[in-house]
Amino acid sequence: MNNSLINEKLNALSKSKFRSSKHLTKKEILYTKEKGLDTIKKHAYDFINARLKPAIIKNDGKQTPWHGHPVFVSEHATATCCRSCLYKWHHIPKNRELTKEEVDFIVSLIMAWIEKEINNTNNSF
Image (cartoon, rainbow, N blue to C red):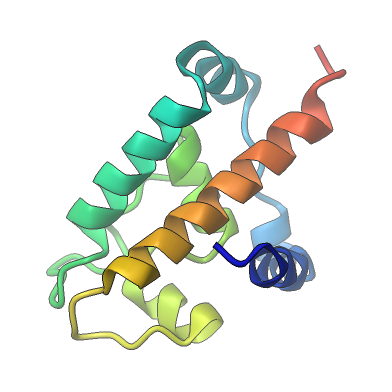
């Protein structure tokens, strides 16, 4: 995945008061460290493929919980939580199935945000 594009997106998102207010809890960070980034990445693929990839999502805008898993928090922080946010922030059209490349981009963005969160809080506890 293009790291400069990921960094550009993270930088743009960090300027949003709403997006930049999202952070992992201590419990979510510990969960991530316990499971490992490879497992969290697998979870991200599972969630994105189930909740965002379909062309039509009956509960779009309400399908992503706010907490409970690091990927959920990251989805809100990276505007990858629903098809409306994907369109607004990443110009990914609604009402069509996501491509493999789009899913890979979304997961890469989610994982980059999670890694940044963990690195920023490594010395906090």
